[in-house]
Image (cartoon, rainbow, N blue to C red):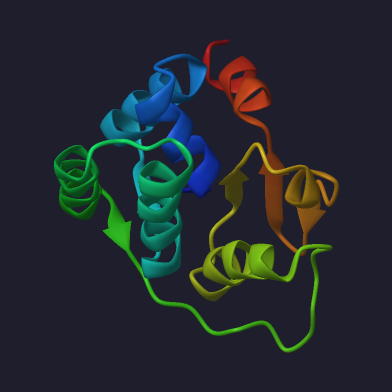
Amino acid sequence: MKVVLDSNVIVSAFATRGLCLSIFELSILTNTVVVSKYILSEVERILKNKIEVPINTVNNIIKYLEETCEILDYKKLPKRVCRDKDDDNIIALALSNNMNLIITGDKDLLVLKKYKHISIISPKDYWKIISV
């Protein structure tokens, strides 16, 4: 199965080492993790500017993501879907590549629950599904 991990899940995986890291590691082993250049850019920006991770470490994380995830392009949505227009990039990625699942901690995405054929769930809810 292919899954989209939103930037906040990836950042949490590397910054906090909790549930999101477990989800990231399991997804890398059992699924194809799909990201976009937009997501990689967000991860890099947040790690550098908000969490203040050393630049060498950030570069290593981005390189690791490029090597382990499938980086796909997408077409912009014809109209706005999310409360936060930047989150439309995540929906567009999943929609353009016929994905069925987005895992995110972003409330602006989670409030949708579903968009067309795409389920949008939290890391906690995803963990409940895969640990059954």
